[in-house]
Length: 396
Image 1 (cartoon, helix red, strand yellow):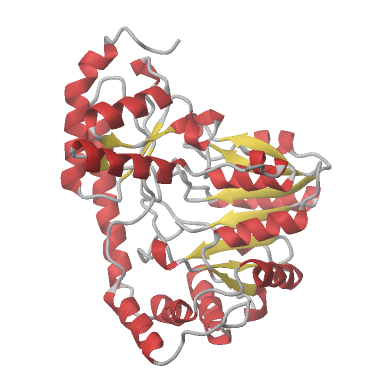
Image 2 (cartoon, helix red, strand yellow):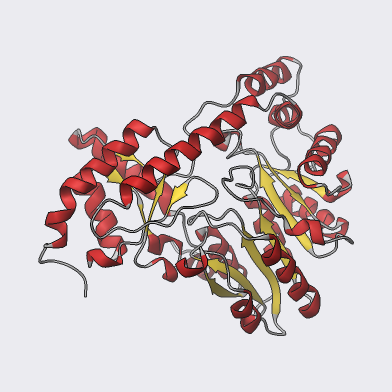
């Protein structure tokens, strides 16, 4: 089969590949795998949201909706964001999609031409670079470094900006590092965008899974609402990854373009899931609060355990549900060690290089798993590392 040349520019998301391999090891070899690879909460979707979806199905919400989303759903998102961030978007500035990836894909494909530049975080969510490459634009990485708690360096960002810079993608709290941009960071980033006339795409999917620090959204600085695009959704804080419901908040002209894109790609988000969104955003928030509390406990257990393992050193993340341990002192390359952990120890994590070149020397583990299983992974690592540190076969 002959594929179009553009397919060679399209990347992938390693978490799903490792999940499939881990499940195959369990099925074919009977290996007990600790699943720390996938970025998905292990909790059930809250009961009130499930009940709302079932009621919507029974009430006949099983048909097409307008591509932008149902008016009452967009109104609920507007009210939710106003309460959450103190920023009010008109419902006409909101597009509801089957997951927030479609917002990113649509806007990048709409806004950039060959030769334009899009700055994205490295390490970062791999689909950012994948879509930029696919669009034909130049993907320009901004390194996120441990010494800066994995926040982008504003002075370094300024040096990367050129007359061809069209979009900057930011993600806070960040996947894979858990880094969180400060109020000063986002204010300075916004000023740069104004000075150099580029758009900011802010991925806020983890913004309610945050610990120890205050969250600041760059949308709070965009008074005229002409430069910032917010991507968000239900997947993480409501444990609804499989429901596929996201949205974008953006200037009205861009919203009209995304609506056209959605008309051509998916038609609309699922109608009964849209109705359940209203309950998710305006209903009881007890379960999401409990999830975040539990994630904090797991984070602390994981960080303490990893920092007791020879060759590992892990900065405490301020958000999301990932740890990003530095493994440089082990002498192993990230991919080789992640492969060994999966195949020999039954620990499914991801190589840091799955998130960009700056991820070399790191691994990503998700703590969207029980404390019992986190301890299991830590104990396996502790037992294996003395031998691994002496292993004769390592990358140079």
